Length: 129
Ligand SMILES: [Zn+2]
Image (cartoon, rainbow, N blue to C red; front, side):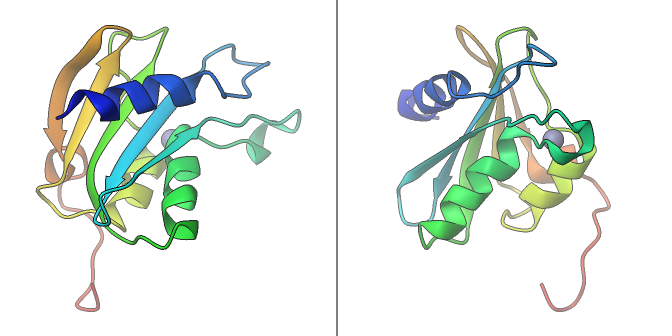
């Protein structure tokens, strides 16, 4: 992974709206158009209405006109590495291939590299995909 993706994820974390959990998370996607799209978690006073950093980044990618995740970095300052939650794994999977690399980072850099298939084995998929 080139360093810019990690830096983008770390920079995105600063935009987190996490007044309740105090657990900022950042995510960065390099899409098939070569651009980097970022996201942070956005919490809400009504807890179920908040969402994670990964769907924020996916939203930015889609609205930027891209559809395919080439690689992705996720960072949380309070965890040595921050694996995407179960729901996010399914959301990422929608726009990733089995071999797409997901980098789990801390403040200093990449701590673990996983493929989409390792994060979400035996994933829900159809002939349509
Ligand atoms: Zn999540």
